[in-house]
Figure (cartoon, rainbow, N blue to C red):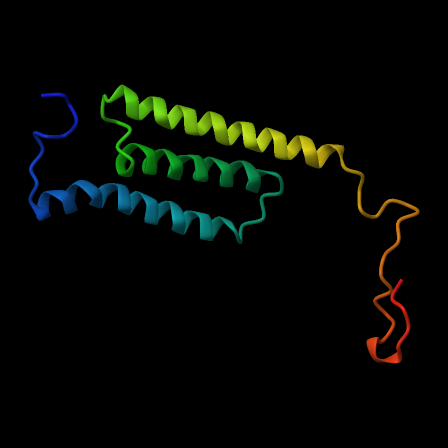
Length: 123
């Protein structure tokens, strides 16, 4: 046995019961997310929301992506994907931080009060 799940029963009932607990946890976390959207906690909303999102991600990765199996190539691929997505986020945030704000003094913005049918230029 290689530990990849060959010994697990392949009946439909076993598959449903094996996936029912993670699905129930995801539904419960979704309900918690929707409920906490209406609770004013100030800066705590961000922390709690990110914690719930991390828990959902962990459940999906472990149960539905099969990362709890001891296959090293599967885990290496998942780590490489996380590294790549982190690299892309770092580049995106770095690019966003180097751009000037759009409402900087001296920038030209369209005149939103002018009607379009008069033939006036918007700039």
